[in-house]
Length: 231
Ligand code: PGA
Image (cartoon, rainbow, N blue to C red; front, side, top):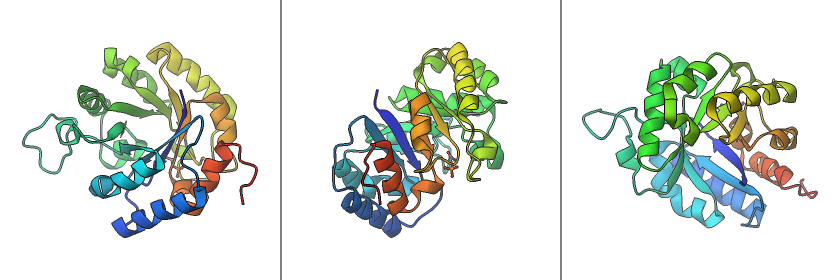
């Protein structure tokens, strides 16, 4: 499987900033084939449709940062799996620590979100840390083996304190025990200086801070590609 490089902008950027970002990335990258790497952009929901042609021109995939735990129905403000059905969205991040913290999402909510995504053929990227790993696997039940798991230690997110490789390898062993052999990602202060270490021991990474500026994200991508001409 190609390594996933998920660029999660969270709630940043206007539409025109997002379009400029994609244009700049396309120009700086200058290539559309990235052997062994699949970049996945998870923009804010309103940008999905306007950005789709540009993302597809780059040969990248689209994801969302969240999905409703409910099916189609009277749930004002929620974006359901049914809303996304037929769209090019391939991945849905669920259970990010910011969603658990600021939006009070529970283990059960996250499991329902993963199920709603799977129902429409979207692969959930379930974010967990040491506290949530075991209960989240239990709540997912049989769905666990159809997810991607991302280890996101809260202290590493947006802090510059990226987690040591040994910790990630150890966490991966627990994931294998609880989730079977699902793809395993790491997220937390990944940048162009450390991405290659993480790609050695994972199936990919989630990058937020280092994805916000087009120039930096291109450096991250080129480093991952092993391109010696990074400037
Ligand atoms: P960061 O965020 O890259 O800014 O540390 C990672 C994440 O929230 O997944």
